[in-house]
Image 1: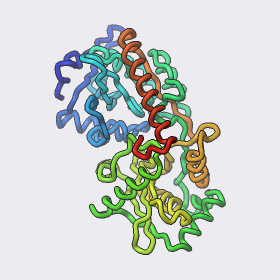
Image 2: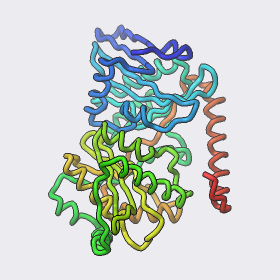
Image 3: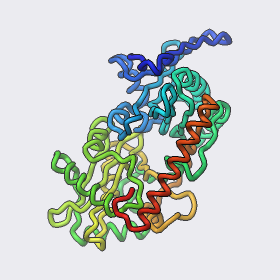
Length: 384
């Protein structure tokens, strides 16, 4: 493993716990050697809490700014990995940075989370991190264990208006015969699928570079038409295809009379699939194509052995605007099971620097967001 550049010279931190004969060793690095890479990948992909944002493939492909890069954290107990994380580092000032762990850190046992968090805090602080944000992908009976681990180590939820990730989503269960999955949809969903079939909409896999380029054109058209929809963190179609190639999943195209009119991509994480993107062209608004795209994505995921399909976000309460209301109507047509996950949490690793830099960053982001929304509402199509 390569150590961090000079600003992170304290990245390696070996922790001896006198109360136990076990040796705990934590490491923060910019790159991993061949052995470390194999161990990291196997650990991340084999966890019941696996998430694509916690895979090296995501760190290599994710969009970033000039002040961002990605770090790899690992923690071993007696030579065996018990926790790991992909951390996005955002430099706030020389020697000071914000760490963001989307859907992590990753463990194999919920009971290990507190130990892993304490090591992560110590190691990141030594490397110059003043503020650490994280939100492990956990649900069900393991969630209280991890929630208590975060509370015990000083993490508190970010305000709702500043949450960068959804904490409520919908799961369509695929672990039953295909006919039973389809029968479980609401009447609206089944009706829209029949209407798409009657209109002549077909869905196929994107398998060639030209197919990927076609989906990129759809994404560009969708982005131009939906200025109120945040697509800032979305991978382009080529990067989505590369992520799918490494983790599993599929990219699909909807066609009508030989013309591509929509696309959908999902990626595998553990035993589930999760929606990466879904976009349709702005013409032919009366012809349903989102419904067959999502249904064919579910069928493909089921063929891959996935037991659930994550719709990547659901409104917790009433929709905030017409766009969200339309998205919820679409997703609810597939009768998903609601899943609650922890919101993004933050801890001040260096309280004074956290108060100065993290607070200033949040004020700047809030101000920039307000300006983009005001410009969009005022009709400036270039904004956002």
